[in-house]
Length: 346
Length: 112
Image (cartoon, rainbow over all chains, first blue to last red; front, side):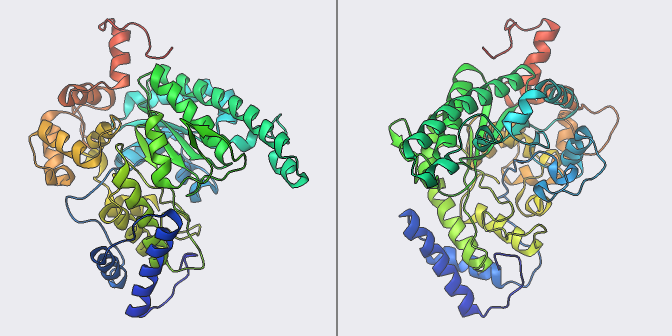
C-alpha cells in the first residue's frame, strides 16, 4: 500500500487499481491516461513475484541526488542513519561504493537561509571534493520560503494572516519575502560558481506555494543568464499551491500548475533539469499510486525539451510513504518511471 | 532507498558511463541524445554505456577514472580534464584549473 504496508491483491484488483490510478491523474491534470500496453507492463510488473524489478538493459537512466549525503550522515532527514562519516567520505562512497551517476554537496540544515551564514565552509567542501571526485557534483539546498516568515524570519506569516481574512496583507508579505529568498538563492548559487560546482539543485521548490516558485524561477533565470552554472529545479508537490494566487511568471499564473505545465516555465527560466513530483495517497495501493504518478510524468516528458528527473523519495513518485521503503515497491516505481514515464533520470 | 533506485535504473556512475551521460544532461540533452552523444565519443554502442565489464576496461584505456582503486589511473581532477577533452565540453573545475595555471585566456570566474 502507499503507506508501505503489505497487501495481497487478485489480478483483477490489481488491474482495477492501475486503471483507476491513471484515470485519477488524467482527470486532475487533464492529460491522457496510460494506454493498454502500458497498463499491461505495469500489471505484469506488479504481479511478478520477484523481489527486485529493473529497467530493461539499455534503458538505464541518470540518477541525481537531492538531500546530499543526508541519507548517510543525518539522523532523520532522508531516512538518515547518522553514520560517523564526514561529507567528503560520504560523497566518495556514493561515487564508488554506490556508483551514483552524480552527487550533491549540501548542508544538514538544507535550506538557503541557514546555509548563507556558513557559505565559506560549503564552498570549501565543494572545492576539495571537485579535486578528488570524477562524477558531476551539484550544490543543493531548498529555497524554503517558509523560513522567511515569522517566527523564523522577519516577514509577517501569511498562514497567520489568511485565517484573519487579511488577504491583501498576506499577499504583500509573500511578495516581500520572495524578493529576499530570491536574492539569497542567487547569492548562494554564485558562491558555488566561484568554486566550480558542476550545478546547483533547488530542492522542494514551491513548498510554500506560488511565491516560492516565483522566487526560484527568477533566481534560476538570473543565475543561468549571468553564469555558466547548470540549474536543476526539483519540486515539492505535484500542484503549485496558491497561497498568493495572483503571481505570474512570463504571463502565466503559477497557482494551480501541474507538472506538465510547471516544466515549461522551468525551461523558460533556463534550468537544465526538472524534477517533477507526484504525491502519493497512502490509503491507496502502490499500483494505484505508480499508475497515477507515471501518467503525470509521461505527460511532462511529452512536452519538455530538458531532461526530467522525477522525485522518487518517500511518499512521492509511487514510492510508499514510510521511513524504510520496501525494496520491491521502490524498484518497481523506479523502473516504471523510466519505461512508462519516459523520464530521463530520477 | 536511493540504492534501490540505483540498482533498478541507474547507468552506474563511474562503474560504467553514468557520469558521462549525466554531464551531457547538464547541457540540457535528454537521455537518448545524451547517450548517443557519449556513445559516439567513446566509440561504443548505446547499450554498452551501462555495461560495467566493457566500461571498466574502456575507462582504463581512455584513462578517465575507474571505480576501483588502481594506482596510476587518472583520478579526480586529472580524470575530469581528460573527460572534458574526450566529450568536447567545458567542465567548471577544469576551467578553473586552467585559470589557476594561467593557461586560459578567460582569467575571471564565470560569475558576475
